[in-house]
Length: 256
Image 1 (cartoon, rainbow, N blue to C red):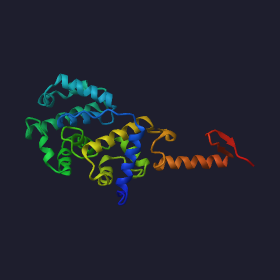
Image 2: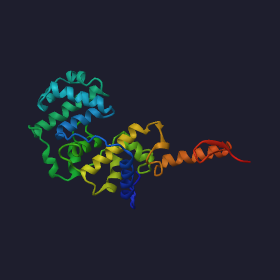
Image 3: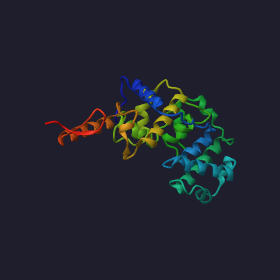
């Protein structure tokens, strides 16, 4: 596993955040839900667009206004209500199982006690629940009313961190990536981590889309290894074909 940079990584990530802040229009904040609500929303959101998962979450809240009701709901009924998210069958089962386990130890479904624990212990407790991996656990702690300093690594964030060289190109899972990146973010508040997540995710959804990266307008083009690699390849190709760029950016034949 690639190790976190021992020198300067925190400063590099802060510089990335500052570049994104300068380039981005004001972005909407993340609504603070109760921890269980955020957990369910995040479970629905795995590999699913935010608009789709939010609509599914709201439908569940209308139909099952209490968590105990959702925990006891027939899996097929829940599956039908969330049919437009990815893997609805497994998510319906895992949500019910996770809520049932929480209900046994905390019938009021109040997870505020997690705020009294170290972050790593709280993450480990959540990850014992069915369907809860590092991304869902971290979002439950960070995005909810708990507001704990855990960094949420979704597919967009992972892709950008790979492009920028903070994690290996082969790292596509939140758990090993968390172990690499989080030490460099030590000392960041929950709000700062949430903001950084939103900034990176927005970049991944707009400019740095998988397979459709627009590096020429990316605010991270000067620090992104993938963008620099593509720029070098383009310069090499232009040299080989006898073409250079004018100061205005227009292509012109190279002088003999």
